[in-house]
Length: 424
Image (tube, rainbow, N blue to C red; front, side):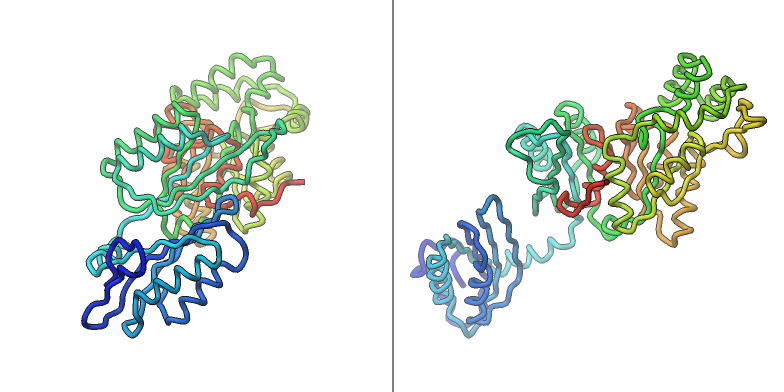
């Protein structure tokens, strides 16, 4: 076999009995079209089997790794010499290392280990953030297989628009201390102004089909009931109840009844006026346009009101809307809602029903929300995301996004910026 360290081709030794040799070749240099083809064609001359391959290009710099098995009827030192000569003619550096049988068998066995995706989200990835995340990964005994930039290339000169940065770590193995790892992710998120999402890299992650969104303070920047209360002259009173409910301090059903009752007598004519002034959350249109393009089904599951949900449904082409129906008699709000209240438990149930209706597993659903009444829905979804959420929600949810807009959900699906279209 080839020795583990190969300073030059002359050190390559061949066993007495011919046997296949496994060698890892690493090529580096300035990238240009045709390099991989030329190297591959040279390996083909010796009928080598390609066992593993990985290639990356960073700003025109090529890093190509090829693990090949050299057939027993070929002289390994001759193959190494020829590949070095070929690389030199192409302007590349070539390094090689032998892989002995025990090392190879250990490598094969490692493929059974769990695999995860850790997604780093930030307005701009700093070296401090990158170092801290890498250190946490190492402390948990996880191996980094691949690191990929998902976001687009940042302009050299800032144009004043909000920036987005995303780096994806492909990891192998299980965290040595899952509780400490989760605590570490939360700590880094709070200290370094970033978000970290840790997902199992399985078939479900690559086949999500439904995205369910809360409406108020998630899809919209405002709490609609607070806007209604302002029109009714009870703004401060209702806002205080809303905030307490979102923090989980008041039962949602009771808080909703108290807030809606204060709207009694309000003219229904204010509803379209409020709808017209509502502002979408950053990235909301970009998210919905691209989800529709990729074939996802979308839903608004809200403790808010159907009038505004249907307004957004038409504007954003949302497939389903489930919210609370304000009772209106003689053109005025009665201070009551019609039918069952869409509370925390009902949101989770509606998500399950949507999955069943679409013929998919609940693991293929995504749920996004900000309040305590979203937690059961976030927990039930295959990917539950706390979006710019209250502390109690951030601590309880599996994933969080607090630094970027709603379109950051696309990064957690592994979608790259270059694959997206912009809304009109």
